[in-house]
Amino acid sequence: GALLQGKGFFVSPAGCGPMRAHILRAAISKHGGLPQLKVGEGISYVLADKSCETDAGKVGKVKEDVAACPGAACVNAKWLELVVREGKWKDPDAEADLLLLDPPEDGHVAKKRRTTEAEPDVTLDKEGAAQALTVTTTGELPAASKYLPNSSRTPQPLGPGFQEVLRNIVKRVKRGDKVPEMVYEDAECIAIYDAFPKAKFHLLVLPKVFIELNDLKKPHLDLLRHLHRVALHLIEGIRAESNSSSASEPFRAGYHSVPSIKQLHLHVISADFDSPRLKDKKHWNSFQPPFLLDSADVMLRVETSGGLSVNRADAEALLKAPLRSHRTKGDFKNMPLLKAHLASCSEPVSTGVVY
Image 1: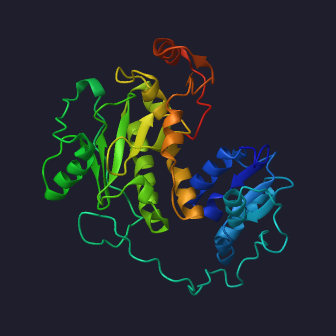
Image 2: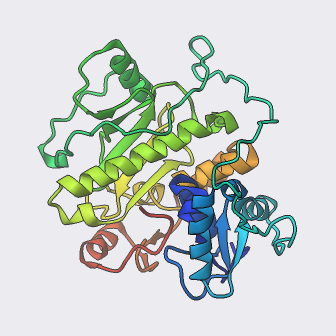
């Protein structure tokens, strides 16, 4: 989209925090804006949460970011979210949207009384009782197992009922069964090898509660943030431990618009797309935007729109799109030509969001 076309933005890490920054940058990129990763020239807006004005330390750091972006205005991130949600550009209002960055006199965080109603409990497991969504989004994450090369792993039997295979894996984990395909576990989720990897590194992050993509609502945001955080944690672990050149490649972290299997699952996949399992147009397009919904963009859509609605027919039509390189944006007539291109092209990834 051209909503933010040509406009430069810097999301202040001190003013928004790393997770919020990921979400905002994804929205800026999706709507044609220029999300800059470093302060400097060409930035029109520095984004920060208004709440940072209550913390003298954060105010100081945000001020440094603004000073390093000549001519940039410091704007409340809520303004950009409203522009994206309404799909119509409006300049930030001098009184409502611009941040004054006046720190509190005592230098401490001002405590604000919450006036909004608490989010209601949400039924996540349709086969069991209602479960309250209480997810820890801070603290140190457990270490993941070292990623074993795809060719060296023994394929695990999927069992009967392909549609239920991911749910069955979650049930096995909850029972305490040994799950050889699992590489990570915490209180809220697990990560497993994709049974049919489409790249040198391909994992799935699954919540331990049963939920589908179209069920997502605002109360699930903490869960989505946790899955996203785990995905980034897994990518960092792969890069730290692997000697493969693909480990230094960008990664995608996203959800299929129309999942082929039950249970919400976040794909974490390296952008080399080097795998004998990558065989046809459907395989390729299912891991490219817009069919692959970036994790940060999903969080933004749920937060700003209250949920996620996917038109199945429109989404499935995307799987029939031309075979287009995610690096050069050039089209290829068939998979052998595309795969030869992928093996030789060293251009950076130019489509979608990568990590």
